[in-house]
Amino acid sequence: MTATPTGPFQVERNGDRHAVHRNVGIGTLSFKVTTADSNGAFLVAEIAHHAKGGPPRHLHRHQDEWFHVIEGEYIVEIGDERYLLGPGDSAFGPRGVPHCWVNVSEGPGRITFVFAPAGQAEAFFLEISKANAMAPTDPGFWSPFEMALVGPPLKVESPSRF
Image (cartoon, rainbow, N blue to C red):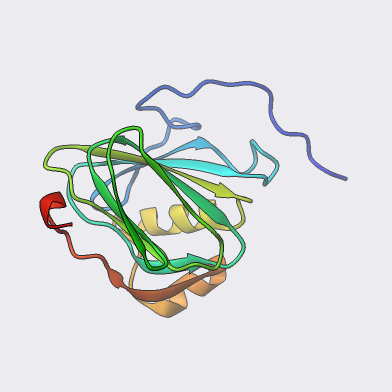
């Protein structure tokens, strides 16, 4: 029997679906649409950054990922392509393609991620927030979440050097 998605709801700009904010070291993670809300079809998460940085290069075995910048500047690398994204810009990362991103903003940054299907992405975020840090560079950490660590984080570069 398939579960029914929840009814309509609203999440404010600085809000979280369940009114919980999670520290990921360089920013605060909030869920806008949870796995349960969409019956596993997708997950929407957002990180409001107070510092530069980003995760190591990785891939999702079963999820596509869409990146959407709300505030600040980010360098997003997907496969062999590298994009400088500002407010309103977005990029798409297909499943199985290595990718990473880095916040290069001089001030606050805010980026939204959509994972489809949701898979284990929410569980991954909940696990890293327990350590109040970005995801570890231990390859064994990633595999239970149907992901693979494939390289180091991007170096924080000035957008003018991009």
